[in-house]
Image (cartoon, rainbow, N blue to C red; front, side, top):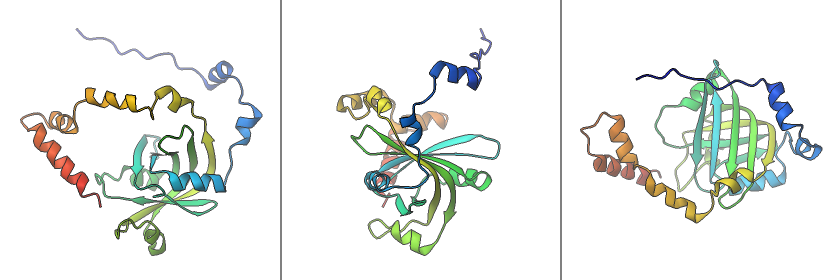
Length: 209
């Protein structure tokens, strides 16, 4: 038995604004166009961010980036750089930025409820002076992503409070999920040992640096 696909009603933005109301002056006033000392300090303590990009047709991709705290470097009050570490080589972010240079970043610091949002324009670079600042344990990044900041502001902690993201008890949920090896085996059509895939993945993780 098949079911017709149903689409929930689409609201116009005017309807959304009517439901939510207007932001107050404090909220509007927190949005800046350059990195202040407190933004710089937060980025210097952040080991993880999410990066959103979109291609020319508006198809969006959001990818995680992580390394030692401070892996993203503030170059000046309007510019920061993010190293490109070894990954799956799909290069979705770079492909999108070649068509549409808009970018959105969300920085997190473990245990901290507020997050830092940065929006702007971005492009890849192999500038030696920039890559030298990305060096970790004697290994340099092959590329870096330069972000020209247009908007920067702290986002309130309601989402992290509601999600209990930093609550150690929440980590018990991971035990209910299939392993990465099991997922990969299913995606490859079966007949492959999930434990072997899991071992290969773990070996790859150990070679990150």
